Length: 159
Image 1 (cartoon, helix red, strand yellow):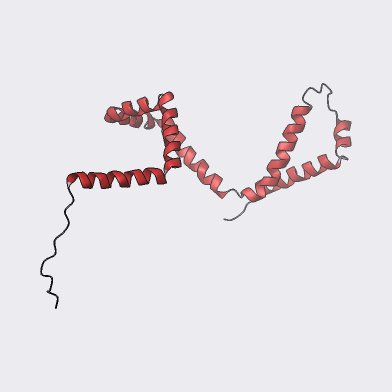
Image 2: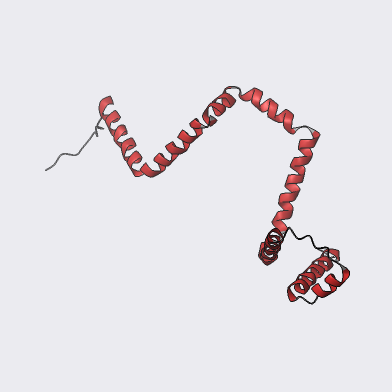
């Protein structure tokens, strides 16, 4: 009959074996993430070419002084107001319904393109020209949209 096991001995790895195992893990991770690492090295290379790495080294080396300069710059009344206005603008942009705005923006782009193509017109527009223009369906549609827009701006809505 077999004897009972009374003690378990752990296999101790030598320092060289542990180091070889760690190097193998690192090598496997490098191979698994080869593309990501190459792209990261490419980005870092571009940053070095443009002096961004040197700038970051300087900023981190003089962190307290850089932070003090930034805080002093941001604490001026003009910059404080600019930050406040930027936050209000971002909040307002969040409330805009872009889906409904898209057709209007496309029409605005068409109008700008039309103006840029015909910007060298020397002809003065008179009253009769305006009355004739109202018969043009595109101008009439544009004026109708503009009047609807102005009516919507002027109306009071409870939110």
